[in-house]
Every structure is written in C-alpha cells, then in structure tokens.
Amino acid sequence: MDKVQLVQFFRDNSLDLGLILFDEAMKKHTSFKIGGPADVMIIPQTEEQLIEGVKICRDNNIDFYIMGNGSNLLVRDGGIRGVVIKVNDGLDSIEIKDNKIFCQAGASLTAVSRRAYKHSLKGMEFANGIPGTIGGAITMNAGAYGGEMKDIVKKVRVIDRDNNILELTNEEMNFRYRGSRVADEGLIVLGVEIELEHGDYDEIGRTMRELTQRRTSKQPLELPSGGSTFKRPEGHYAGKLIEDAGLKGLIHGGAQVSDKHCGFIVNIDNASCKDVLNLISIVQKTVKDKFGVDLEPEIKIIGEDN
Image (cartoon, rainbow, N blue to C red; front, side, top):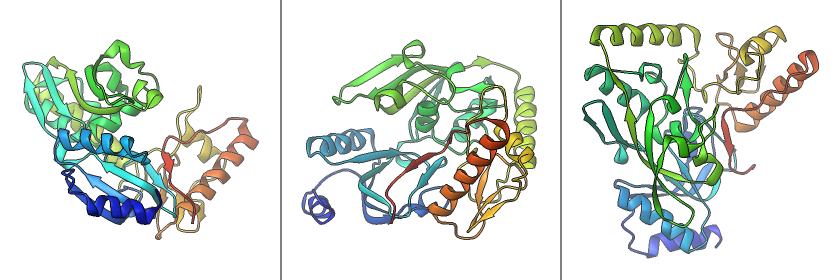
C-alpha cells in the first residue's frame, strides 16, 4: 500500500500497539540527529504490543524496520517508507536473580551494566557508556575494551520470520565480530538472559570509572554521531588508518571526521545524510588508495534519498 493508504490503515483501525506517530522525523530518534520522516512509527509499551505490531505488518505486507535507541543508525534524507517499530523505554525491564540478569530488548546497555554493578556482578563493565539497547547490542554483538555481548549472554528470546517465539542459546546465536544470527535471519529480540560472575563491588566500580574516563577522553561524545563509523579492518585500526591518511578534521558539508577520534564521523552543523555518506566515501577511497585497506561501515544505513 502507498503512504496515504498506510496512514489511513493505522488511523482507521483501533489497534492496541502503543504510541503511533505519523510523518515522524527520524532525526529526533537517532544519535546522529539526522534523517527524514518515517511514514509511521510505532512505539510499543508491552511485549504483546510489539509482537502484535510485527504480526500486523507481516499479515498486511507492510515493510517495517525494528530500531532501538538509534545509536548506530544513519537514516537517509528522504526518510523511511513503511513502519518503524521503536523498541525502547516501554520495553526496558531489568530483573536480577543471583548472578543472572533478565532484561527486555529496550533496556539500555548502560542501565543494565549499572544494575549489575549495584549487585556486585562483574563481566559487563565494558558496556557502561555504550548508548545502545540490549536488542541492538545482541544484533551486532556490541563490544568495547575487550568485552563483547557473546561473552555474557546465556539465552535470547526472539520472534522469527514466521512469528514464532524462540529461545536460543549462546551457541545457537552465531555470535561473531559485529554480527549474530539475529542479523543473519532477520530475527527480532524480545529479551535476554545474561550470566555474570559475583565480584568485588569496589573493583567493579573502579574498572567502570576507568573505562568511562577512557571513553570520554578519547571519543567525541559531545557531538552527534553514530558511534564508531567503520568496522575494525583485520590487522588494523580504522581510526589510525584515517589519521595516517591525513583526514583528521576533514569537513564535508555539516559532517566532519572527528579531530578527537578519527574513527568517528560527527555532525557539526546540521549535517544531512548525504554529507555523511559523501564523507564516508572520501575516507574509504583515500584509505584504499594509500594503504590498500577496505573500510566497511559499522553504522547501519537505511531509508531513501530525497
């Protein structure tokens, strides 16, 4: 169905799906502060609403995209046709039993990490300060400072392509560097069971403070971005390659290769998606020409051009 029909469908039907928004600017929902409008945005407040929203879209052949905090998302200037389902604040419960944490997909990594700390559970210190949600972190096997989600996840509850709800073990998740079975098969994360170890409260706190200090001193957290722009190429570091290529601080339109950490492209002046994509292309070509290394974006790029 076209946009008019789509909007009419969601206006006319009394659907219990949570908050439903129309022509919603995606720049309000991404850490890059970039992106044109989504035709329809659904923000479910319960797991049942999320499951029903997915089922309605599939039953009516409506294109949909699942997002969390939008912390590694770059949306094109033309926006997103179809439906965006935002899994965030309404689906963010966190429950701790002994050394296990049960959390919904919309819980923030930082919130879960800090709850673990309060209960003297170690193993999740690396996640403190990562701006994404648990669902997004599982999808891309998020990691930092030597830790990854695959190290701590015991089970994941998902919706598969046939709307079945499955419980997958760590071994069944096919975790790897910035990838997982969720991404491979288009699964939708509902919740996660994390298993940690009991540790020393003061030591955990010290580690978290040290990692936070490293993150704030070396990353341009004061500017809108999508986090690390590029995946780490084998045998190299993207930021070092970009800096060695002489691209530190390079500006294109409203976008800039951060002069604090070259692995980040930041929005310094109301950048458009096109500004960022053009800058990404310049960086990729320059690094390839100088060092023969292909840089692959780590950020997810979706939507349509103007």
